[in-house]
Length: 475
View 1: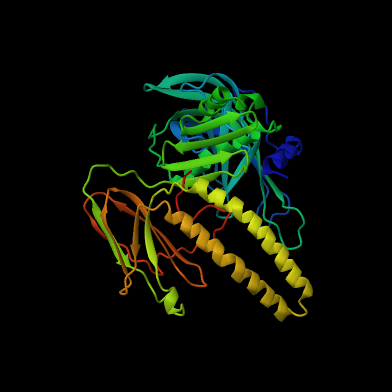
View 2: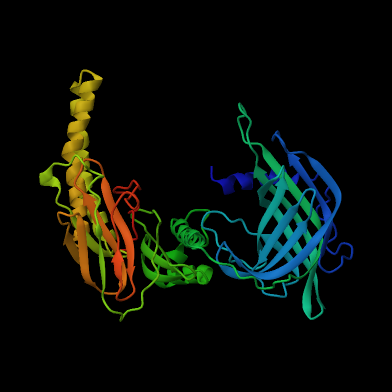
């Protein structure tokens, strides 16, 4: 069962877990000084070793606000941090859609399920952390209510006053023989008066991984909604016509991405989006449904002088290859390589060959009388099927190369007059082992670049039809 479904089922049980924390007290609460949080908390664990139950009828800490980038959708949001210090630190992070000052009244938590966007007003994206036994623990809000009662001004900066009721949970660690994961529940309630943080607009560097996660979330949300699933991110019809589908993506994710390609007709679609913060491209199509993401190289300014790329291809990696098979060619492909569509078509053709090979293998296995005969049967099918497969996709890749070079008797290759740009140096040794190179290289203008192909940059990533290619590729 998906994690967000389990959390939803637990909400009802959490509603009874109040301990001594009186959730739902008067929203105004006692007067608190600017920059402070005053409240109560409790921690309840079901059979997790090393986690102690506790009830603290009175805790206090700090309350600050800033305008921060939310990793959920890479949008700048009004962000409050309520922090309770040692001996049992707790941090509540609340990110709201409303700009400063935060609108008065009640705000509820959004559930960051797969593909969900932060789109509804008066909702907060919340994260809750606690340090237990020296380890930082992340809690998922199961029920959260934030009530803003007033916004005042101190030294020219707003102070946001209100009350928070937060019930959250995490799965604990199982002991040997334990069937279900224990559930640990953290409840915090109290009043705050958040003042401006020391750095109101902190600089946050968005990594390629952060960007990829957001793009994948956006495409997940689109795909789930398009199916009409109950956990979609809106009305299914909003994703089944091109104009409305574009509005669906841009209204939720425009701070994180731009649409490079969108073809939508009912439940058939093909989408490609590019990150605004990092050079990541993700795409999805209704036929396969898998989201594929590629981190692109930084663009190169055109107009520079041509460069040169040369190097040596290691022969010692395949010392037992017969002399008549030692001819090696090196190819220079653009990076990213525009081969994804052609490779998928090639793989569709291979499906027929694979099914025939499977039938042949099954027939040979049925008549095999011992394990040695089975191994011989498998080896014969492998020899008949795998070399043509490798030869086929390598020949396909060669078609997209801008330069080709035959390796000389000294093991060297050379590409002259290479225009500025991003490239992949591609080659393979004709051997039983899979020895291949897909080495990125950038020519800015006029350089003499050395790129040896050896064990240090040999491709070590297993891949095949149905998996991502081992280098950046686009359609």
